[in-house]
Image (cartoon, rainbow, N blue to C red; front, side, top):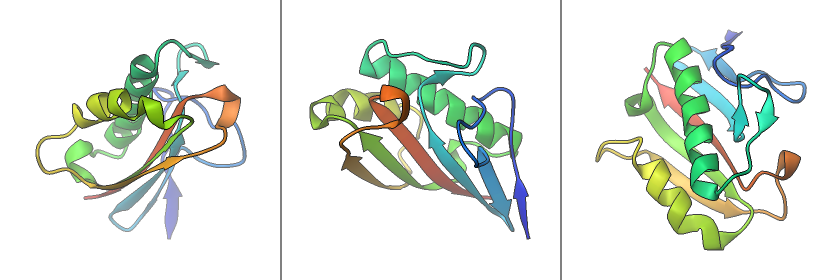
Length: 125
């Protein structure tokens, strides 16, 4: 059985989906964009700021599910330009200890709302 896990501490979905779905002990977190949950607006400052906002949105969803980044087993990172990879990687890596999850990074032609980064993840209690 699946259960939606949503929080007002992360941005509301911009389409027909939930922030995350819990099934059993596994949480599937939808792709998060650099949207400020307080304003509902995309913040397109530099890519480090965007990545931090994405990770903070993921953190809020994990916390709502009574999880933290140590529960994350897999991440998918979508970026609009591979030249931003080092900066994204630096911010992303600061949210984990040395027990990093599996991950892939995919360069895409475009992301919703013109964002430069979007991250989804899977976490297990």
